Image 1 (cartoon, rainbow, N blue to C red):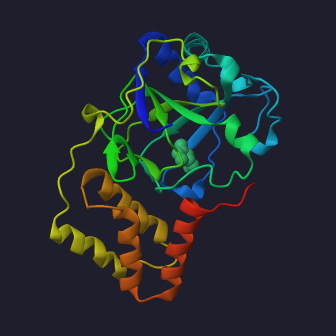
Image 2: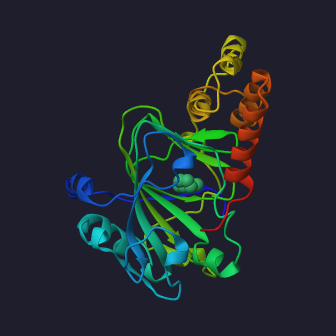
Length: 284
Ligand code: YCP
Ligand code: CO
């Protein structure tokens, strides 16, 4: 399913802020640190097959229906939102995800999943925006866009994508992974419309990167070393969220910075990082 806005749900401000407050007390994991430049990408499992704890797909018995975890139970309004708006029998996982002052490495997901059963169990990724602001953005291929509060989106995670919060906002999304169903419309219990893509109104206006700025970024070749690659990558990704540097900006820029550094180890590290996040991952 292509990345697209599918609808908007009404949020009860009072109940939502109670749950957001309560979410400070739940168990967030900080997985995927190799994808993160900045503060951790925090994720808490709210529904899993069988309702048990765990973080990785292979730890669960995929034949069991999803149930709320102990953390899920501590967020009554989020629970209510899920039950009211989704056909829960198709849900595999529901997670609460928080990000602040951090950018994710543009990557593709599911590349590590070899078998069709696993893929069918998490065929669609749905985002529901609970709390966001101007400094929170998403990237798919060469576009940068914003998902707004209350919006529900399908995200095609097999396309190169990234998330970024370039300021201090605590951006909170509910992520729901759903199994493949014959008719995706059956997943939703709210008024929805498959828009087929990222609406114009959600795209971010980004001024073109100037030649001076590009030169400045390439000059990071004089700063980059094996220990600060992720920080340099973070700067490049942050720039990508605010300025339009042209096609494949992040990875082509990193490749160029590495080349200009004249250090073979950096060239290899950047190539390996690209390979790991976009082409092949080891199944855990
Ligand atoms: C995502 N993919 O795109 C996750 C975030 C890295 C893997 C962490 O939501
Ligand atoms: Co991803």
